[in-house]
Length: 220
Image 1 (cartoon, rainbow, N blue to C red):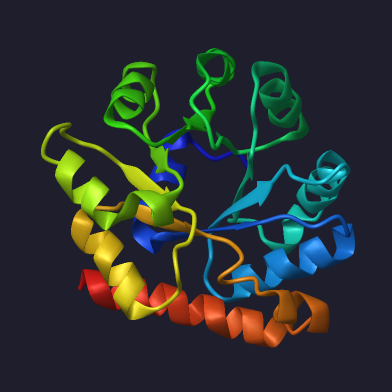
Image 2 (image 1 turned 120 degrees about the vertical axis):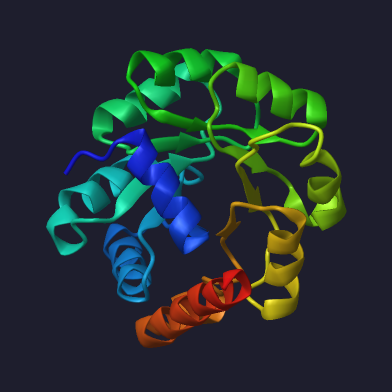
């Protein structure tokens, strides 16, 4: 299934949570994604942090019939060539922890959503001027909700995804959404070492559902 960039942005906005995860075991990575999907996730970022991340990502995409309406992108992409490689593999969107404009060009040429990581107002404005519809604020735990609430009035129509140290509890999520976040990216706080080690996919599904429910409640 092909998704438009607008569909992806709308879904990120609607669910409010984008899990991010990496694993070098393709079968386990698939089970994690399926558990998150059962928990209600519809936008998922697999991160390019292992030597075999490309192969695992390709394996995940081959199983798409198990999660037909899940939008699957790739994160931790650092340059234009890698961007193109993963777009060719079938990534629905590209996320980066940095702002690198050659990646914007590749995404524009292939009509793919590019979400760069920014940590200053200058970077955020530069990203927006170069076509970033959604901007990743990273590292969130270092910048804090105060950073977000102070820049929101300065740049209109900002759509920010907060990543890095976001916790799946009401206090932390409330601070980010009150500050003006469009959605949050969550990794190790959601996919704990214990859950992965014990392959406790039921607990993972439950945790994902709870995080999504907190966001829903905060917004209503």
